[in-house]
Image 1 (cartoon, helix red, strand yellow):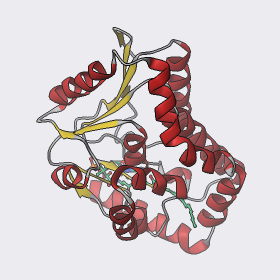
Image 2 (tube, protein in one colour; image 1 turned 180 degrees about the vertical axis):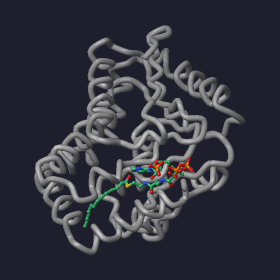
Image 3 (cartoon, rainbow, N blue to C red; image 1 turned 135 degrees about the vertical axis):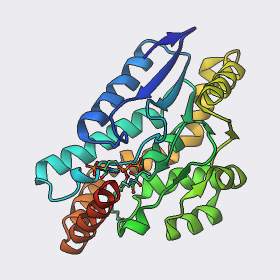
Image 4 (cartoon, rainbow, N blue to C red; image 1 turned 60 degrees about the vertical axis):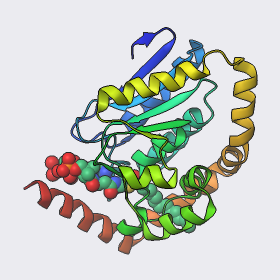
Length: 250
Ligand SMILES: CCCCCCCCCCC/C=C/C(=O)SCCNC(=O)CCNC(=O)[C@H](O)C(C)(C)COP(=O)(O)OP(=O)(O)OC[C@H]1O[C@@H](n2cnc3c(N)ncnc32)[C@H](O)[C@@H]1OP(=O)(O)O
């Protein structure tokens, strides 16, 4: 995590697709805590993969899990998200590859998004027979508005880079990763002279409702997750999805 002029670039590096398992989520969470403690001036979140930003939650964490491990997985996701979404420093996602579901959530949790061409992003959970939790949905709604979010979430729509720009899911398209980082740096530079306390206060004001909805209902949210994924038909769906992903690789 290099810090250049107080700006950190956090590069996710969990091959092959940066899927988010408990360990990876813990690493991200620790990183965001450290950045806050070190009074970082801005953060760029990106990926070491040339084609994938993050494939979202690691489906193997939800497929036939042990109960306690599944609980820990979900709580760690909540912890990571709460830290990122409420970060006092400015955040940019340099989306240099596909960003489905939890990968899209990561980018939506940043303040500004730059994407490369010819990749897809969105909350596709419905298409997998699972449901994007309320706080995932809130993040989408906060980015693109009620009507577009409702349509996108019901359909589990994956947006192309161009569609994402048009609907406001991202702020800019860059030609490649290098330009993506340059544009991310330019956004952070544009924020650098703003009084930090005022900036942070306004950001948290906008995000407060979404954050407190989860903060006040964390246990209930965990229970909803557990009850949902332990349903036999959901497990069957996850099994089939995992098989389809593996078949694709074969
Ligand atoms: C009333 C309210 C109720 C609420 C209830 C809540 C219920 C649960 C909520 C859960 C929310 C879930 C969020 C998620 O994030 S689920 C994950 C969704 N992700 C996806 O659908 C993406 C799947 N992956 C892909 O589409 C492609 O892999 C991708 C486009 C990202 C990259 O393609 P590429 O061709 O480069 O790579 P491969 O597909 O060949 O994959 C390589 C290997 O990686 C494995 N893989 C891929 N994605 C995942 C994943 N998300 N988890 C685990 N493993 C993954 C894939 O199987 C390949 O593995 P093998 O090489 O071993 O075959």
